[in-house]
Structures are given as C-alpha cells and as structure tokens.
Image 1: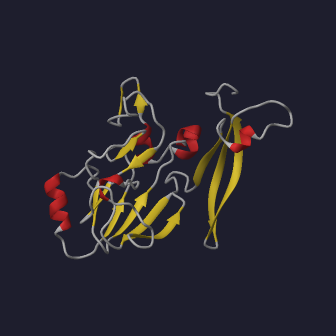
Image 2 (image 1 turned 120 degrees about the vertical axis):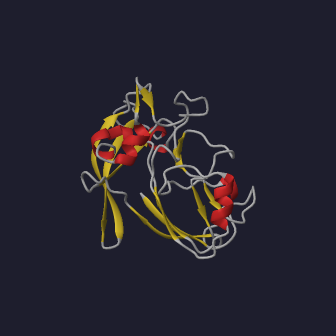
Length: 217
C-alpha cells in the first residue's frame, strides 16, 4: 500500500513508525535531523520501502530516523506486508524494494536484523521511524489533529502493474475457532488481488492453500 499524510502539528517522537525510506535510502544522524528541522518551507517528501530503512520483527527507540517531517510537510509512504513471501512471484519478484527486504540466503541477508535476536523472530515489517520536529518522547499519533491522512492506495508491483495481498486464517483467529463443517481444522492462506475502481478499493480472492508451517497444515 502507499500512504500520504500531512504533519499538522508537533507529534509522535521516536515512538512512531510509518513505513518508508527517504531518497538517500539511509538513516539520519542527529545533526541531519537538527538541520532538517530548521528548514522553514513545508515540503512534499517520498519514502520508499527497502532494507536500509525497514526493520523486521522488532522496534526500539534507539533506531535512527529515516525521514524528518515538519508541520505542513506531506509525506508519501510505501507500506510492505510481512506476508509477501506467501507468493514470491506476485508480491516480491520484480519489485526492487521487496526483493531487497526479503533477500535472505545462505550467502547473507540484507536486513540488519530479523527479530529482536536476529534469527527471524517477530513478524511485522516496519519502515522508519519518521522524526517529527518538535515532538517529545511519549507523544502519540492523533489522526486529524497531529497527522492528517490524505490518501491510501494499493501499491503495485512495477513488473506486473498489479497489487496482491495475503490473509491468514490462523489458529488464533475467529474463522479457525468457529469450527469447520467437515471437522478438518486447518489454517488457510488466501492470496487476493487488490483493485481500485471508481475511487473504491476492492479485493478479489485468487487462490488458497493450507499454511504448512502450522500444526494443522
């Protein structure tokens, strides 16, 4: 998905993570943050997801910011699902940012850490953080007063021009706990296509498979 927001006031501090990366594809040091906060003109900024700014499966306040936002700035942000690996061809292949984030082979990995201990623990891919000038530790995002969400759109794979997502009907969810008519308990992954028509976003199931990593797979 892509996300566009405008910072309206002082907010967030280092407790906020929004997905994305700045044009330099690196994290900012303290001096760069101070210099960016001293600028007077609101700007439009773009954040693209990649391994140099995303974190996977952990978060702590010492992570250096990937972007600085001032009141009045508009930030265009890419968001990445941690379930993209459920269908590599549809959600990763041909997308430079996703290929970069998901590269983990016997020869090495591009992400600095995966999980709090580095071995793959944890789930969600978070990109950032974004430092909002004037914010203090403990400040919290308040939509409509601190940050105004301007739009939310499907993020297309540049190779196919299509957007796909994944839904896990897992053992901790209602669909699993409600029971099965055939008495065959199973966790199921649904791959769906995301489309946008007439200003509305729709999802269309493409196919399903059992989650092989579960006890019921």
